[in-house]
Amino acid sequence: MTSTSRPRDLRAELETLTTEAFRPELAEIDRLPTLDLARLMNGEDTTVPAAVARRLPEISAAIDAVAERMERGGRLIYAGAGTAGRLGVLDASECPPTFNTDPAQVTGLIAGGPAALVTSVEGAEDSRELAQADLDALALTADDSVVGVSASGRTPYAIGAVEHARRRGALTIGLSCNGHSALAAAAEHGIEVVVGPELLTGSTRLKAGTAQKLVLNMLSTITMIRLGKTYGNLMVDVRASNDKLRARTRRIVALATGADDTEVERALAATGGEAKNAILAVLAGVDGPTAARLLEESGGRLRAALTAAAG
Image (cartoon, rainbow, N blue to C red; front, side, top):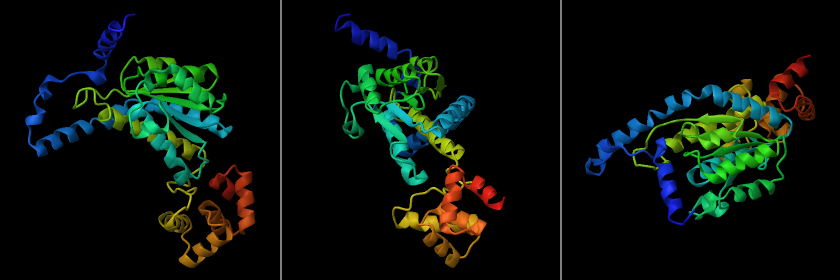
């Protein structure tokens, strides 16, 4: 293939993608008043949740598969380039403070490495080999789950990550915003959230980016719920690493137990400031070490620990 034919072929490929489609009716939006533009963009955004809703069965199946592997000690690994990669890194980085996970338990890989979070790293997204090397550096196992994220569904880095992970026996998920994508085809679980052409032609940080963020929210949050990282809708595994989170921890214990401030403080002091342990200590009437033991024996699941304490 000549150097001129490759760009021509790529252009032809992009023209087949819904996310790259040109919308003639929007060709003069730059002439619109700002308020009209804001209304137009907001209207576009309101279509995204419905597109995600159409893929809920596939999303749910993927979550159950991820949770099963994480229960065995596996990791959740996102891999993408550009906006998709940044969204994966963002979602992964929120898990330790929210669910008190080890930073390695949920990881985001972005083509080009950390520098690509703030600047474009030219050519990185075109390399399947780079994705393979990034996964090899993590010592991938069959208990891990790898989520390739790409709005187009054709990004070589994301596809390469999924293909390599699948060869290694890991669970694979392909999240894209085009139907019949190469990424979804390469993965065991394909999730194609088709949000349609963008307000700005090909700017997939818009509706496609929003859709990916919504799906990644589900993947991590519901997986953590399945793993017992919450009690009802309370973040009982929250890591109290600053004043706001320490205040939130006290509030969580109070909401879960109905205890007054004095009892909440006493329970937190007895359990090293761990919300889940403090809740168990209050509700089951046990001391700190007993709460810790019951939770360990129950795999960190508060409801199971409460049942064990009562039995």
